[in-house]
Picture 1 (tube, rainbow, N blue to C red):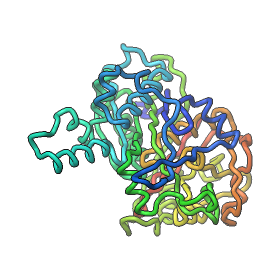
Picture 2 (cartoon, one colour):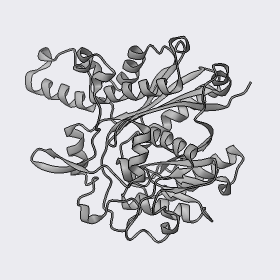
Picture 3 (tube, rainbow, N blue to C red):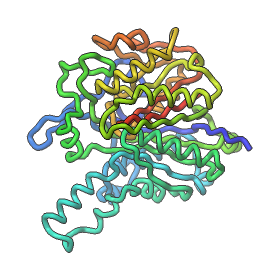
Length: 394
């Protein structure tokens, strides 16, 4: 039995829009998400979803009862299914696996506030379903008629990669023919305020905007959703599906040495990428470019710069999509979809980095450039030293 897993569809909702071709064109032109939101009288950096209307995908009556995260997920999944050419006859048994860092946090805050203010008897039952972490996966399945395996995976900033890994394992074990993998998070005011108080967001434009810059002081908090349709290769072939790419292998590592730091990230990146490459039966020299997890946080950027400077050679490149889209917990799914599209077109977006970390400077594309090769290494890195490496080919 062939256990190969391929990607046949991709959809996303993001801070640069929801049309993949347009998003890539904006990246090629050097456009990136950068704005502020007022939260309790303070201007907080944020990259919010734009050019999106939930009612284009969901009935208005339902939208009023949903958190943004659920609307984003349904929209991205709808676009991915359409991109994959999935019709009603293909939906029975199709699963939904969602990765999320915060799920319906907006409703959790609202529900708790109402309870503290008015007491238990005044709580509305309409809010409660959104507070359940698995609500998004359930709502996607109900709205789109997908009755296969359904689950939610949470791993903070590698939630998207963990969801992909779980779906990939289910497909290889023959537990489903196809699964929609979704990464989704939204930036409600309470979450944005909390991130600001923790000192996570970039604090000023003067501090630099790009990952791998020596002047960078933090990430740009973002929101959105990405969805991939994963299928067993034989199932995709039976229905004559167009294949965007193949998930060749996945490597995982966790140093688990801290709660909020990236102190062991370099070790975790090296271990997970080596594991993924060995399982794919290729060496690092077979990789055309790396989709990095760098996001402007100094400790993470330094770890990635060190890791890639010790393993790359020649004309290979390191790209950070988070430079353009900002960063949210489950953004790995969107980054994988964008990586496949870039590999297919043979071109990666560039980003000029002032005062780039010297270890990585020579591997950063200064402008959009063409690359030869059909293989990309996607890297996800989480706080505490967790790392997920995915070898993709087109």
